[in-house]
Image 1 (cartoon, rainbow, N blue to C red):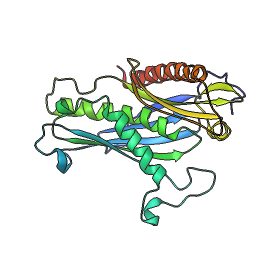
Image 2: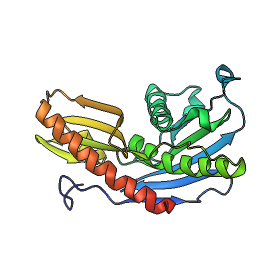
Image 3: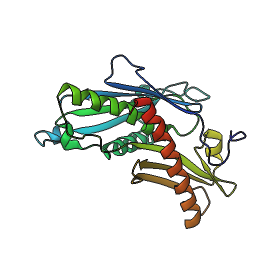
Length: 237
């Protein structure tokens, strides 16, 4: 609920690293009551279509645990297939994180980002991107140290945040209740430089103007800047 937040205030956001002793990178990210465990795993081989290309790859998988929502949801593995929403979100995460990686400098290896939603209250995809980047950063740092790589692999920081129009007014970082009644729902993935990785914006039986869109973009840009500050503090960079 936004009762104690202004339209441009985000929920309490935190990043905690080192939450998985096995993964090359790990982060528990919290956007209010949305909690996502993100891990990064390094595989010393690329997908077959990149073999002998000299390039690496970054990909992502996303899932929601059975009691991440107010009623239990079945595991998709039990159903034998992933839902369309799951596939769409994990592709978004993968595209976003690949956008800031120099795949040639990564070498012929693959980094897999796993994002598991422990608790959902809106904005799980943008939290996954923001936390997934922190896990990815740790994994890349380890690769560079282990293989004495001096070239730049991560080009810049990146984060995602949700925005929306509620009662004709723009709002930043929507929780589930706000998202469910929003006239416009948007997800912005933006780099530290201000360059855009991806924008998803949809009106729900509502047309929005260029002016309203610009307000949403400005809100998202401010939010992403704040998130990146927290990422850097968490990573001590």
